[in-house]
Length: 417
Image 1: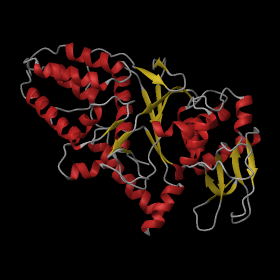
Image 2 (image 1 turned 180 degrees about the vertical axis):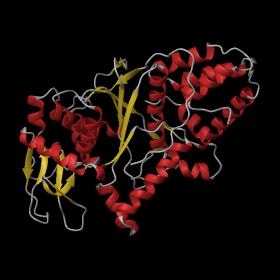
Image 3 (image 1 turned 90 degrees about the vertical axis):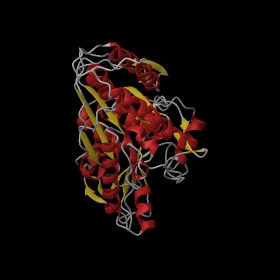
Image 4 (image 1 turned 135 degrees about the vertical axis):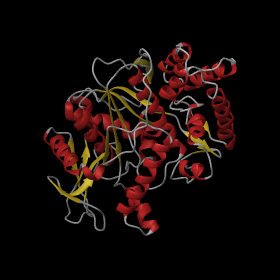
């Protein structure tokens, strides 16, 4: 599947440092230094509604990471999925009276446009789940052979085939993964989140209430694929495991996503990948904070969405939206207000006025570049990075080519356009 057009990123003099990131599995800061290609997997959208600012903030955080890696001279391989078949998508399509495939296609196209408007560097591999059903089925079959799968009877399936579940206890005993490895949550917290976020802790026949679904046997009226496992479709977590492992290999550099994916999605994506490869899924697990609006976490289920496309339609400069998001550290939760966009608009106006004074014949200097590199290498501290640009703007000194290129390359804000 095509992603979106890649923005131009200026090449800066010298190289920055690969950033250190906060790793949720160890609650420590770890370097993202690698001897080879830096690899990144970020969970994509379920395309049943347009891109809201929570999505944009997450993908912007990892866009900054990719920019830092490129500035450090690294080769980067970035994979993102789109969950274009899943219960929430099917439910929304039924509610709207449209074909689920048409809904997924239209919302994915809108997402592409939003990402392009925000100058987000696209993934190298943008993979819809519907394109990898045979891969996922083969992986579940391999897990079955290895003893990590058990059957749960399903009277609703069209041919009375069972659903297939992951045996968390077996994985915990025989691999390097164990329940809670990534999330560091206690069992009561896991059970609560599992039920809230698509799990089925009360289903009879499961060995552990927290065991996740790997394969859903075909039901009447639902999409299904004929595979080595018979008719059905994948569970949620195994999709990301297979897409990532089959394109990036084991022990990728960073697995990323929003904090609401920490459990159960990322926990079990890591579990499935480790069971498949015998290696830890990722060296670092990184999560972006949540954005709230009018007192509640911004989410599709609540419907309190501030959509990127609507802000742009109302006249917002996409650079202002980007600046408003960069004005908060990626790991922190915060609340969106109209003033956040207004403040970003004022900041951009000052920066553009400064950029108009560019000294085109001046030798490029490294002071602002160094300040931006230092800020971003410290857990992607965009707040400190924006402050560094503000200081340069207020200094009264006209910028040179190097300063404007640094703002463009590292923060994704083109002050010449």
